[in-house]
Length: 268
Image 1 (tube, rainbow, N blue to C red):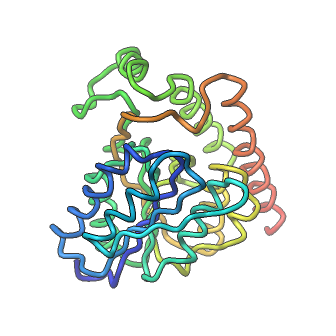
Image 2: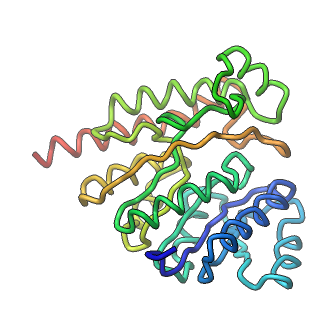
């Protein structure tokens, strides 16, 4: 890697012990194989009830570049991510879900694109060329019903997957942006591009809508890179398993998109 001075990978966790057992070694392998010496993997744990803390402390013994920050107080995905960004020590920061849906090959793909476009922000996307839903095989030829069947046999939510696509289409219509995956949560860019206020005003994944809008407002170039979203192997989805839970989770996204759209026209 020629253009990346250093990378902090932030993993917000809540009871993801089993998934990070394979995710973190995979990320370390990506760094080693691509000769990235200056990196750290920072797990930001949101008061997990499993053994995440003990696991990371054991990993740290063999690799001091793997660390954990234990949050206190109210649980918050946006603030977990911000804590990781704020504590990061390198110029570039990446964050992604710790449930295994964003595998090491996807991490590698985003890092390579960042190295080739050092002043851009790279977003991992399920909805552009090269991207795909959970349940879709690597060939990309699985039909919708087969994909939903695959998901039903995993620890993921079929409803969450369907509504994610619906919400993304609606957000894309509402938000003045060319980004297709507005619920991605998989991104790498320069730390200085990230605005703390985005996380302060968000309740869950809606922070990503505000983030994309803020990057556009500040004329930061955004590139979407397709990746295949993998199915959860261990644990339960944090998004919700019922329609009422999913709508409750999704409503803040719509509010964020409307606010961003109104803001755009107020500034014309």
